Length: 261
Image 1 (cartoon, rainbow, N blue to C red):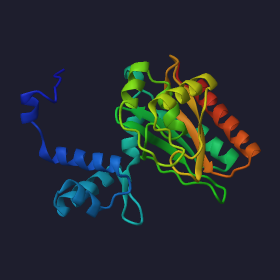
Image 2 (image 1 turned 30 degrees about the vertical axis):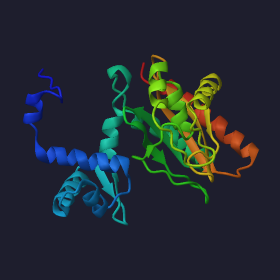
Image 3 (image 1 turned 90 degrees about the horizontal axis):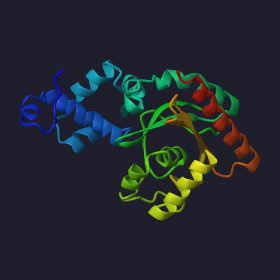
Image 4 (image 1 turned 90 degrees about the vertical axis):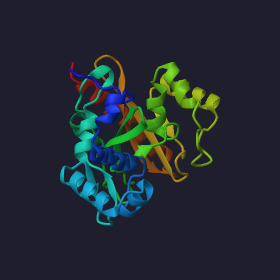
């Protein structure tokens, strides 16, 4: 099979401009979920008619979705494709595998539940189930989360090889609240603690009003392929937090046990 190097002159010559534009739109939505057509037009400096046609076509194929306010997000079909990419070339339909576990956990707790993965661009919320109780937080699949802030993000980062962790920590670490760990040495210590205890906690790193617990999902080879997490409002009683943490750990264990052998 012919393999193309994106830096190869021939590969650069034989490109399809409309596909380049489509990829630009998808990348824009990946980085700025919830963008409207005007945002994409401004961000990419592409004619509005072109952006409209691309988004309309992508929506027809479920590669993007549009909400009632006219905001666009990555679509279910695109996330489903991402769910099939596992470590070492292994193909896993993570969304299908995760659904019963996420749904059971959400029913048990009444909280929103999400499944996150890590790729070359960072942390991606692959799937989510909305909470049933009155004050449950809302979670949208397709969101990109910071690599160093949040329970699922830290957990996935903690299980990377050492050289990859150091490469991520060498990048600027933005502060989203007073709880965000932006010092690489402190974050290394936090990641080591997460590996030892087997779960991660967000004490308000993305925002002071939101906390979370996350636990790892392993494949048949013992690699961490995803994180199950539950976000909840700050001020939740300690006994309730313990209930959430143990339920998240159990759900991740059950999903790990259901992974194909």
